[in-house]
Length: 155
Image 1: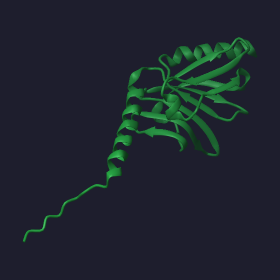
Image 2 (image 1 turned 180 degrees about the horizontal axis):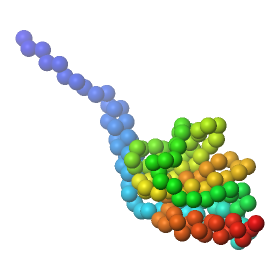
Image 3 (image 1 turned 30 degrees about the vertical axis):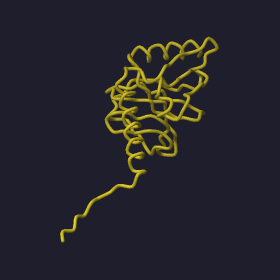
């Protein structure tokens, strides 16, 4: 008599694997879709708006920020490698693909909406929910100049 050991997965494992595959595929598709993961603008009443684009809203679990331009302390372009991410709470992080959501480090909260770009736009805030907003935009240098012009216009 020959005994054959067969590995049989429970039926719900197929559903779990399908859900994981769909989520990972969605994250990758969002990251590779385009250079902008966030839309940045200044309203006529001098408020900074940062909104996630497309499915980034789902992965970041955030609708973005709406703060007065006077809350912006500094804005600049930084290489992704040198930025401290911290602990995810809540959000999405798939190494090398996407970082989106709230990350906590050193008692502060940062909002990330970044894909695979080497350089990111970093907005430092004062007196708001988030200390830093780190976003991927198509041209971070132009966004920096535009935000600095809005900051100087207000002050």
